[in-house]
Length: 289
Image (cartoon, rainbow, N blue to C red; front, side, top):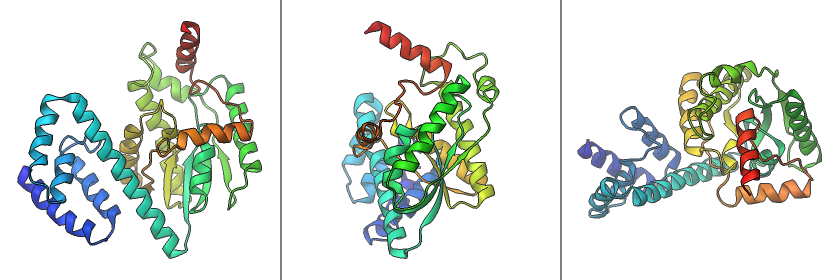
C-alpha cells in the first residue's frame, strides 16, 4: 500500500506542479476512499508530503499519527482545509476563464447561514436555494425561517437572480431517523443521518432538475461537521451522477461574515439548528450560563 501511495503521489505531483487541474488531484485522492477513508486522512498527509519530494517527514508523520492524536488531528485538519481551498479556487478560476456560469442547487437551512454563501458564490453560479428541512419544528418555526430566507434574497444586492424552492414540510421523515436515538448528544449519529437525509433530497432534485452541482449551506456553522458533509456529498454525487461542490464555508471568516450580514439585514438568528433536540440543548446552555 505504501509503495502504491508513493507511485501515485509522484504521478499526481507531476500533474499538480505543472499547473494542471488541482481538481483532478482532489478527485484522485477521493477515489482512494474505496480503500481508505478520505476524510480520516490517516495516510493522505504522508501521501501529500511525498508528492512534493519530502522524504523524511512522511515517516515522521506516520509516527505522529500512531503516537500523538492531537498532532494527528492538527495535521489532518490542515491537509483537509488545503484540499478544500485548492478545489474551490481551481473550480472558480475555471468558471471565470470559461465565462460560463454553472447551475447550483444549494440546500439552505436558514437565512443567516445562506447570507455569506450567496455573497460568495452568486458571482459564479446560477443558484437555486432548496429549503428542505424536515428536522425543523414546530411548523411555525419552519415557515418563519422560510420567510426570512425569501426576504434575504429579495433585499440582498446579488449579481444574479437567486431562486427559492421550498419542499413540502413533513417532520415525520426526521422523526423516523431519530426514533430510538432521542437521547444521543448533538453532533452524533442522529445528526449525521439528518445531514444525509437533507443532502440526499438535494442530490435527487439536482439530478431531476439538470443542475451542474449541488451543495449545502450547513458547513458555515461552527457546530456542523464539514468533513461529514463533504463525505456524504461525495457518496451521493457518485450515486446520483451530479457533482458535489466540496466546501467548508465557515473558513476564511465565512462564519464571521454571515454574522455581519445578519446584522445588516436584521435577520432572525436562532441559536439551534431547528430540531427539538438541538432546541433542548440550547436551552440547557442558556440555563448553565
